[in-house]
Image (cartoon, rainbow, N blue to C red; front, side, top):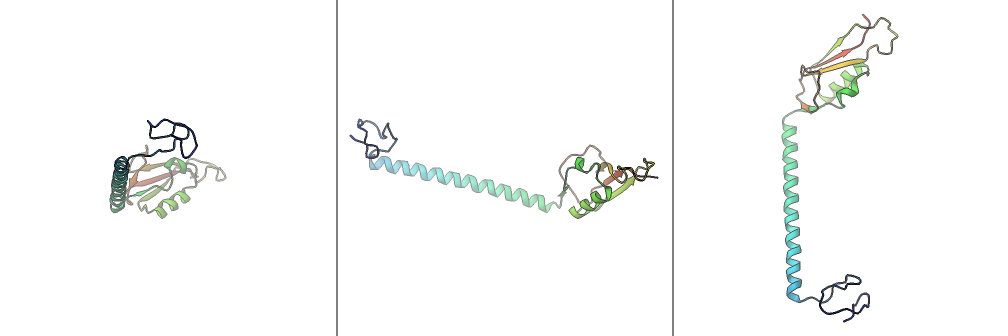
Length: 147
């Protein structure tokens, strides 16, 4: 037997050419079985994909329905930034219970740390954990200032 694709002489035992991998003549019954298997595989992939999408949509709706919001940036990124910018960004994100507290720890108004965030306390915790919070969560911004 000769492979119709590459012309290599082959034995009639196999279903594929050992030279190029071309599929040789297959019985009609075997071809039907293979198509059925492929069809089932696509069906299962479709079912799994639909299930994953459904779970993702449900989880998103639950999160939105809870009314919780996230910080626009990591809390650590706010350290050293002027406190009024941080307060504005948090209010724009939807947080409403924001308190600012000056430390009165500087003597020179020209100090580069003047008005810079020293630390933030979220929900009475200074060890911030990322996540979603209700808009009225307690946020306290401590900042360097001149007395």
